[in-house]
Amino acid sequence: MKKIKYILLGLLGFIAAILIWGLIEPYLLDRESQVATIANLPAVWEGQKLLLSGIGR
Image (cartoon, rainbow, N blue to C red):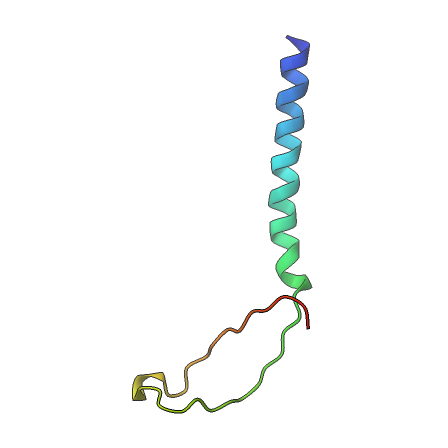
């Protein structure tokens, strides 16, 4: 019974660590705002924001 208790506590700790990391990690992202023109976009896209995500540089 103690073994199950330790496994469940370990699992709970792991889930808590993932949730805490999920709250912290978005603040570690680098953000750069740039203005660009894209030809032939529909008029409804005028003034909209776009997210470009990439790995590495």
